[in-house]
Image (cartoon, rainbow, N blue to C red; front, side, top):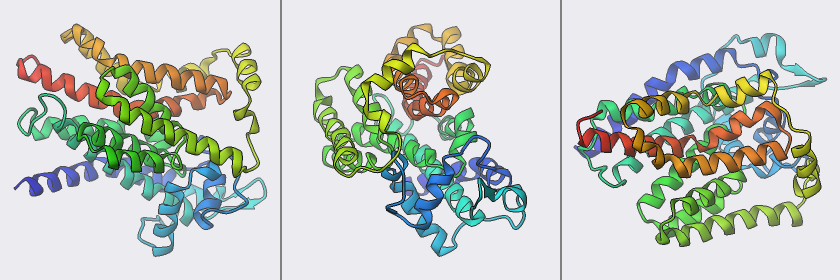
Length: 341
């Protein structure tokens, strides 16, 4: 019966995300917000290509999965899309619509997986047993990962954000399940999905404060050094300034906020602001539970400003969304037990 309930939850999350996926598959044009597709397209076509540029060339996990899906043909590709009809030629290079759709489908499946894994992680949280929250509330809560501004725009796209959210969600689950060996394996692999995942987990675990987190922090630290070693000893051309402290200091000194930055970075955290507003009204004391999330958010913001990525900082902050959601779920369980939610 438990297996059936889990399959139903997974299927429900699949159908909830389906509309956003179809809109992306049909209408996504990467040159309007997801320009990094030009790097990932090469990596899907030829995994581990020597022509890849840093830091994209080190983010091999999602492109490798998308390569298998692309080769198999097991993905949805509309016959007519704006990209195929008018936008596949970019800066003199012709890009494949099928590769774009394979990447979008891969991210879609990974986002569904991330949402489902969050439901299982919540059941392992303090007070989060099988009956702690109704199946309807559980599925609707987890589906908020699809509704984030940055997930809609960048998650269901031809880049790698869906895979990144999957790894963060999986690491949260493994931490709560106390699976230290598997946590170590997954966090090492995550360095070659997105280099920031290990940083996110280190900050989260350190700010959570529990002594039992030390082995997990150490694993995340090793993961970060594995990525740094790859950058140093297996260098790819591109973005060398990311390894230079002077570049970070210069970007900090020239930082400013404009309209696009405010909308795409601050307002784009729509799920966070929506639920923090509700918590502020109905259970203000629970705000302190989000301190680890805000610590992660602060570090990601500083790194985003230091690398001068402008409004793209919004999708970097979205990497912490699973941490916000698992914390929100734990607060919901606590409120439900007191019948105040």
